[in-house]
Amino acid sequence: MARPAMQVTTRWTNKVPAVTFAFWLIKILSTTVGETGADFLAVNAGFGTLVTNCTMALFLAGALGLQLTSRRHIPWIYWLTVVLVSIVGTQITDLLTDGLGISLYLSTAVFAILLGLIFAIWYRKERTLSIKDINSLPRELFYWAAILCTFALGTAAGDLATEALGLGFQWGVFVFGVLIILTAAAWQLGANATLAFWVAYILTRPLGAALGDLLSQATTYGGLGFGAMGTSALFLLVIVALVAIAQRQAMHTDPAH
Image (cartoon, rainbow, N blue to C red):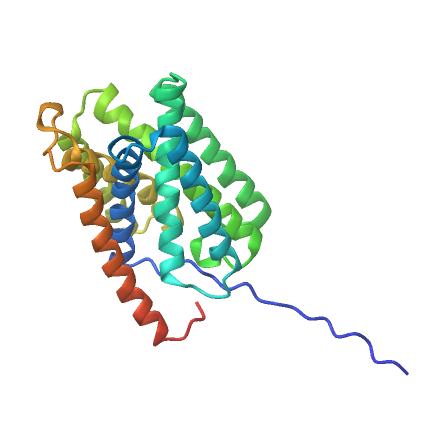
């Protein structure tokens, strides 16, 4: 009598890092690199908007492929994907605003609605939006779709506040920084952790964008004049150092999340 075939099941490992101070620091630095890096490649390096957009999209596809096919959390792959998502998210908003002439009011509203739809479909199908439960391929796909949308939304909202509404780079850093602190305080006082995480994640994008513009833009435009190249290089070095530490720690701990 033939034995019944054994059903083989595989467990999808959660490859999102723990939310620590280092997580938020790298996230903010990566958003700043997304703002200044896209400008540097397209303008200062002379690649042009089209070549830069296509190249970064291909790099993102490759990094996302590595992230989705890896069997455990690998810090350098995860954060490389985040940095590239940041750059591509910035490019999407810049394409709509500068290339197609779409107003920042409209693009901000569209991205906010799109993000709401992603969350609604995600929750309807999976019954959770928690990053602690990214334990299947559909959930990880929903996660990265939401991440890309938060970067595009944050770029549009940040430009709307600092440029269209005249808030300026310095006040932009201050206002968005205060909003993040208030979100953290609400979480400490008992607010829903998942909601607080996503609100803070969205707000770090315009904070990083305002910080990037403040550091890189010329003094005549309200910046400090460090330039896109200098700002991008400095922040990338810090990101690489922090990710190297995380990678070293991951090699000495259990890879299971």
